[in-house]
Image (cartoon, rainbow, N blue to C red; front, side):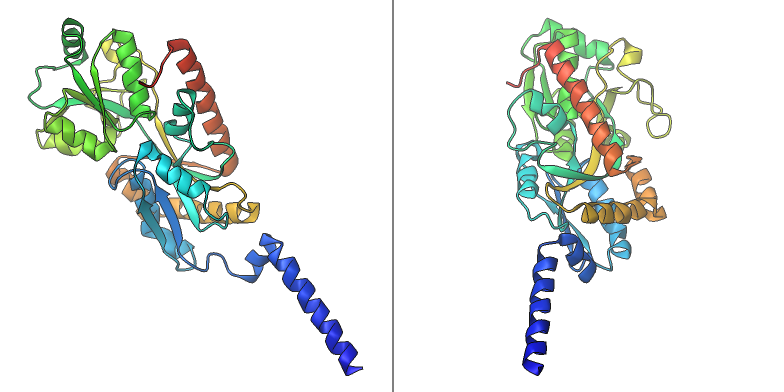
Length: 332
């Protein structure tokens, strides 16, 4: 009788073990999630527009991640694709995430060239965190005082104007290409790996003008090293950049590509984990310290749930696909 009872218990234990291992939601219930550090992968250098939202989340995350840290890892290169491939190939267990999913390096660039990842097939969106605009800057002592000056020089001197940007296929590259198309300027393109490097190139006069995130401009504007000629917004940003003129008010109605910074997990991550992370990051975003961080860095707070984030990115994808087709844009 005891032997039979012991055999029955053994069979039940084996059954439970197989069931839990085969069902991530049960495993999640058994093991408090997260039970170890979560890694957020950033495809650009520290200090840029993709890195900063991740750092902001990391500063408050332990409070909402069972005292586990959110570790930001920068894997820059190939306009974010090194980080993108790394996350797409990671275990879909919620412990390796991507910051910057759905941005123009996916939704714009994929209409220009074949990418090693698919923005919709290889990831599961979790939450939208922040957005920001793009601008064009010049060295502070540049003879270009406005966009008309820049355009006049570019037209009179084809092939002499050097312009930098933060990476091919990104929103700043998109804005620059549309501006060059609209004005008919033939200029020399110099891509850099991220916003801080692009800003330094302009301040150091390695390029005549540069296209980058607007929030990166104020420190060097105040230091007298650069000047902002135009911001890619329908109207002036009265909260953060009231003194910076827009392209549109100067007569250049370019397509206003803005950056969206969303968090995503590898495809195949259980829905229970996606929703769990969504709720935790939502609480991070509602934290006063996080909002204060965004305000200081001049990023726009832009919470969206997974469904709305996916819808927003799909809309961007359609918009950029149409733009590329209409303008005949190509990556050189």
